[in-house]
Amino acid sequence: MKRSLFIIAALLPTIAFAQDSNDALVKRGAYVATASDCVACHTAPGGQPMAGGLPMSSPVGTIMSTNITPSKEFGIGKYTEQQFSDAVRKGVRSDGANLYPAMPYTAFSHMSDEDISALYAYFMQGVKPVDQTTKETSLPFPMNIRASMMGWNLLFRNNAPLTSDPSQSDEWNRGRYLVEGPAHCSTCHTPRGILMQETSAKMSGSQVGAWYAPNITADVNNGIGSWSKTQLVEYLKTGKISDMNNSASGSMAEAISHSFQYLTDADLGAMATYLSTIPAISKGDTSRFGHGTAMSVVPSFRGRSLNESADALAKGGLLYSANCASCHGYEGQGMKDRYYPALFKNSATSGDNANNLLATILYGVHRKTESGDVFMPPFGDQPNAMNHLNNDDIALLANYILTSYGDKKLNVTPENVQVIRDGGPKSNMVQLARIGMGVGAFLLVAILAFITLWWRKRTSTATQV
Image (cartoon, rainbow, N blue to C red; front, side, top):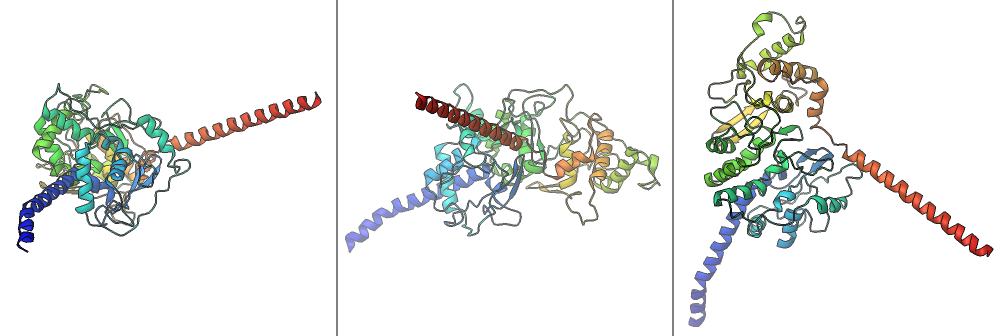
């Protein structure tokens, strides 16, 4: 008995160390999951964390996020660590089926073995299992054939974790790892090619659903080359910069609310260091933060109703006065603390297109950080609400804002508004794939017909002989 007690007593420090080590691994995994912003895509509004069910608009159709809790029946509870790694870094489920690259495994493929192990420990031990199914993704033919992703992966998937660049500092290498890997910045900010692959114009801006992810290269005018490291860190942490008229919205607001604000200052600084070195890609000589001044044309048509205002600018001005001026100011000057930013010298009212302005009007802004809860109500996605605006109204309002406070070269139509209302531009990849398959089938039938005729002719000749 004494010997047994002695053995147990001797083992206690080892057991405690193992428990502490496992807790540390789970804690590290939680941090990696936060840096990877898993919760943003795998949690539906009002739903359980990581239980999936969020519909995500893509250029080829709506993709449903899956349950990634450790539920053995509905989630990933039966995954081995290797199967988990294959799903995260290769886009291959435990049953061998391929995931769609809406799951950013092309970026997660850069993640280290150590972070994947920590992530696995967190999901298996630190996430509450939720026993509920999610709606299946149903894309149009032939995108619904998941096996087609095997060819796409051969062409475009990376298959090796990042290795450090010895010519750069430890901070730069850490920043590159976070930006290219867990934070998957390139997934949103890099334009896509005809096969929906990331192009060589890295981080130069791309449409993601209804929102436009802007240029974040080191270009001074179109990118973030004029931002200091301090400003970059402030933006990643809060979604705004104290001396600029910008406000994170859409997917970026989600990334800041769920992910970036919780990263350490050292990691945010590392990301800022790396981002500042991404090669500049320019799209013009005018800064996207350099358009417009404070002004108002409302006094010139005060007292007239919307119907009495003949020109489009006057109608847009009246819509602005009724819906926007109380927060953004009668001259578009915003609030002094920039809770509601000024509309001039604002990237939403200039840049490559007006899509973010339209999306902001349609869907509003919601960003919650330690610095405060920023909210702008939606004006287009609540048909029965009093502040609901139709496509014609939003086009008039947007053009007034662009003409008065932004880039006058930008102009929107009701049709443009409908595209953003529908979740963003659609790809013609489905049609091209169908055409390609049709041509392939025709060629196959033609070849088979030729072989059949040749064989019959050869057989007939042999019989005659």
